[in-house]
Image 1 (cartoon, rainbow, N blue to C red):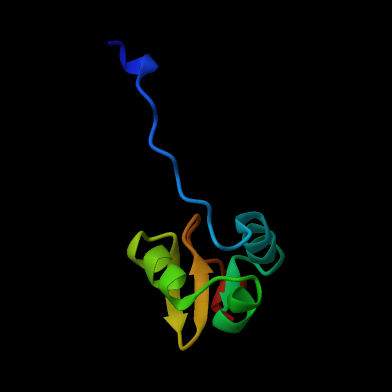
Image 2 (cartoon, rainbow, N blue to C red):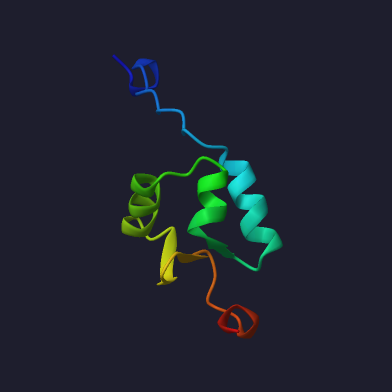
Amino acid sequence: MHCSSMPRPQRKALPYDARAVARLLERQCGLASRRQLAALGVTDPDLRRAVRRRRLFALGSGVYIDSSSPPTDLQRV
């Protein structure tokens, strides 16, 4: 059996709209609050998972930064 003929495991669908989260982060220089993310359907376990996987970093109480680039001066403000 060739590897290409083996079935791929199915990924679970995210319980939130990842594109909407990406748009929010893009509009806000990579920053978002827990409240804003929750409004898009992101749960606390989702946030913990994103932090654990280093996709987001917690900056303070309820503030997260996208990990895709180093912090800018504007983000530090």
